[in-house]
Length: 142
Image (cartoon, rainbow, N blue to C red; front, top):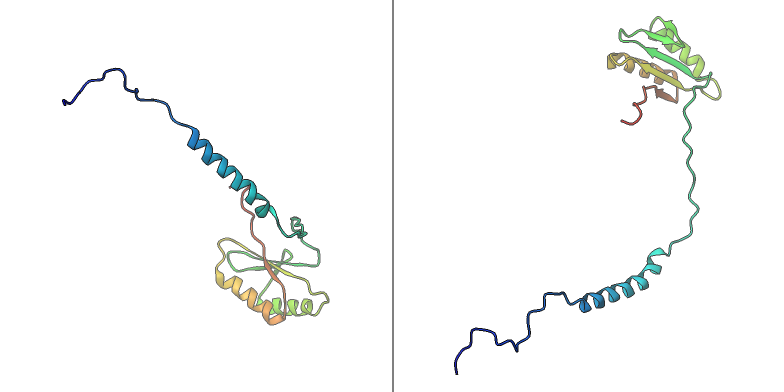
């Protein structure tokens, strides 16, 4: 009994191809599983969702536009208001109107917070319920 190191030619050669039968079996099993589970996943409760419309904001003529520049000067619809006491008197007359108009504050970018804070405090003392800040919209696409 001797060990043979060569090949006699009667042995099977190495097969260099992939056996695809197990792959096809696995794929068919996965296909059956997906066909069974998809109707369960797609079943939902029928709900009518509300629609949303985005409309650009338009200033109503009855709204008050109050601008504050970087020196703290206040402008009521482009007319200068001398001080906060005069602003308080004007806001008190507006606060009793029905429906009450909104106060739109436009502050300069370099205005100190103190000046804007005084305007908000004056509006609160006058009884103004709705105060809004007007800002510059961001550039499109960025």
